[in-house]
Length: 194
Image (tube, rainbow, N blue to C red; front, side):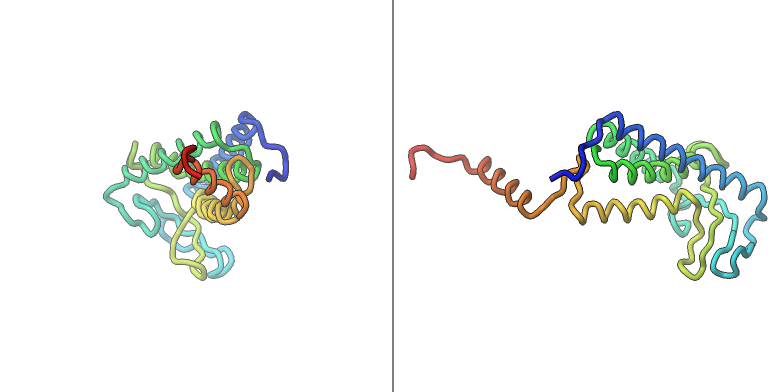
């Protein structure tokens, strides 16, 4: 069941590309401004303890995990970006999926850019983090991280609610029909028996 006509392949790709570029630009501009204006590793209150800036360069993943294997994060980010691009070109026909994957791709590319071009150099650059919300979590993060986390939650919700990449919705009836079709293929009818 479709609520709207599906997107053409080119339209889905364009949506994904535009949103990815916008998020990447916002992330890199915010990081550049943070580097230019914030002192390193000192709390700068913005709204008390609700929102603070704290500039750090993170060689690892969340909570600085895996600092000695930064290159693995570079590979992982590159693989995720390639998968999203492939899906955008070949499979996505849903507007909602195109928006979610475009925003996710932008976040991934934001941190991948840091890994590729920031010190100490390719492919082990440190990600610039500067946003702190100690009331919510102890991590320090950036604009790209916000899009990665919120869009991964969105992906989980789209899957949970049965919205497929092509824009169709998975329903109990469609699951039952697919199960019946796979049972028919798995156990072909013998014309000699009744």
